[in-house]
Image (cartoon, each protein chain N blue to C red):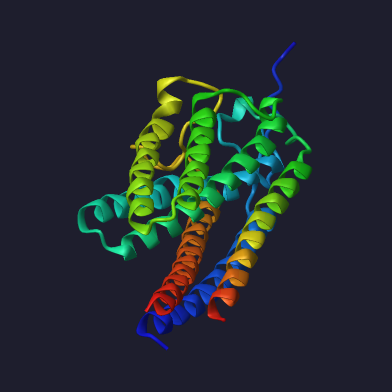
Length: 233
Length: 59
């Protein structure tokens, strides 16, 4: 077994362990939200969607997409295949998290706004980001040469990062229906401590899910690359 | 007609001023259950897809 193949196996094992732990953590956060977090008086139980929706959004926008872009930028400079592998893994997880944001948001919007969807600035830009990430994977699948694939997808990954500040500031710039931030804002979080505790647990679990998924996805790609290199050699 | 200023039940928390709090939260738990099922399913399906791909890559 080559050193890369051995490393890939070790990463995949670690990734599976982290992912399983994070999934258990996610179930625990849902239980914490349902059973041990107070019901918001005006929104009712639907407000508890917040504990799944917001962590997925924050980790997608502030961790997964920026790390995809930075890994891409570094790849353009250093041409290290590890950076491309990481960027691809991070972008895949960003797509999943964005999918969760776009699926759970409308389920909250229906009882609170009275509509599943509105072309509000934040919703629309998040949908654009999701399409951009789908384009990223389509582009990678369409290019056979590894160097070209890494180069072109790195540029697209940076484009994703350009959208992030607009998504964050959209609630201030366009004043649509989407609520303003309650935690990621200049002043102190405007949440009661019991709700803040559940939300912070949600952030920790979403981050652990990101790390587990990326470790596993990186290990898979490393194993494939090691096998291709062995066949080529 | 006077505004309803009945305090919210003890097991609820208001994010806005108490005077705007309706006396009972709306019954919309079904939406929360639906969102949790959707999010949980997406996480589980993606995790399963990664684990299957990892098994294939190990062979």
